[in-house]
Length: 264
Image (tube, rainbow, N blue to C red; front, side, top):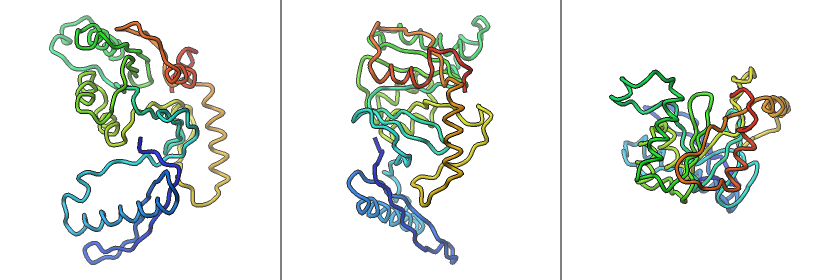
C-alpha cells in the first residue's frame, strides 16, 4: 500500500513556454520527513523531464495515497481520511469491488425487467456459481450508486493482471481498478459523502501546513452527522460458504451495513 506516515512538500520555480511558474510536489515516506523531502524532490525532477519533452518521465509512476492515517488496524489494513473528509478502509489483499452498473449483455435486453442494482446482484450470483469462481465467497452490499462486493477465499494482489481481469469481468469501475493497481491496495469508503448528508463539501488538505479551527469544526460536524447514515447495506453472500474475517466484520460495523439507515 502506498500509504506513508511522514510527508514533505517541495516548492520550485520552473519555466513553461517562457513563463515562470511556481509548483509543488509532495513526497511520502515511512522512514522520516527528510526521506519524504528527497522523494518530493525526485518527483520534481520527473516533472522537469516531462516539461522538457520526455514522454517516459512518468511511465512507471505509481500513485501515493496522500491522506491522513487515522488508524492502523494491521500491516494489511489502514483507515485514512480522504480529500473530502470520508474515512476509507485501505487493504492490501482483501479484494473489494466497486460496481456502479451491471455488465451489458445481449441477453439482458430480453430478460425480465430489473433495476440496475438487481441486475448487478444477479450478475454476481451467476459469476459466483461458475466453475471459475465457485471457490470464492462473494459478499454483496447495496451502495448509494450501485454495489460493493467483498471477495473471500484468497489473498489478492491488486497489481496482478489476473486480478485486474477479474475486476473487469465483474464490471468493476475502471478508474477504481486502475487506482487499485497504482496504489497497491483495495479501498472502501466507510463514512458518507458530505453532500449526501446535506453538508457543504470542503477540501481536506493533507499534510496540513497550519492549524485550521474552521476545518476542525467542519470535521466534528461531519463525524457527528455520519452516525445518521449507512454507506452500504449487506444483501447476501453467494458462492463458497466462507466466514467473514475480522477486517470484513469491522467494515460491516463501520459502514452500518446491518443497521438499515439511509445510504449516503
